[in-house]
Image (tube, rainbow, N blue to C red; front, side, top):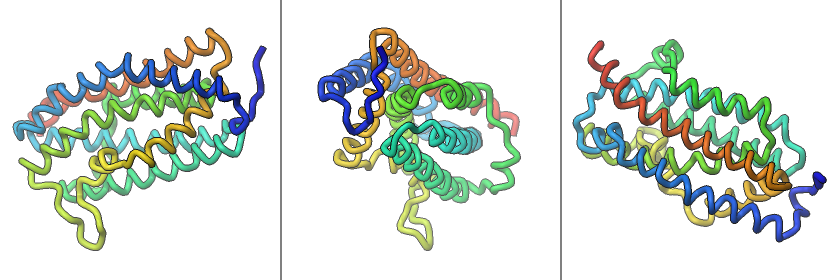
Length: 252
């Protein structure tokens, strides 16, 4: 029997079950994040041997990821069943536009115009990843969506950690942007500087949304599959950056 709990009145036992599920999935999916961090693209940028045009290719796809994620997040708001869920997805949608503005600091520093960004087209793995989250917008529950977002972050952070370090060490980036209090690598750095308090607060809101959809073994299985797909599609994006970025740079 499905229990229609309000997010703010979920039994502690159910919240603990959701916390345990997130912890279990986080641990089981860690290898994907590690593979991204140890991948050819991240290591090549860290070592300063990846061509700058290939890095620009990544930024074009990064732009499309953010714009599609922004559209998805705004749609997720319409699926909210409570004030907490609406607040969570509204916050995420607003943050995504902040990320777009952060990306512009880096693309400006790379000499990429807005026209170039908007006229570019995402590669297949970028589309695969964004289309999966669009599928969640249509068919997923708020709990499935929140879990997918939560588990996706560590994979993304694993890649940008080395990318940011390499851009600063070898490519001349990481400089202050005039008229702001930010570096041009802000879009990469912001995921690495989040405080434990900020992270735990965000995670706990996600837990409450996940717990509402954690009803039985069937829902647990579905939630787990959503998390795995969210992580795997993110990893495929990073895997593709190396070969496709080199190909793009060679054809420039």
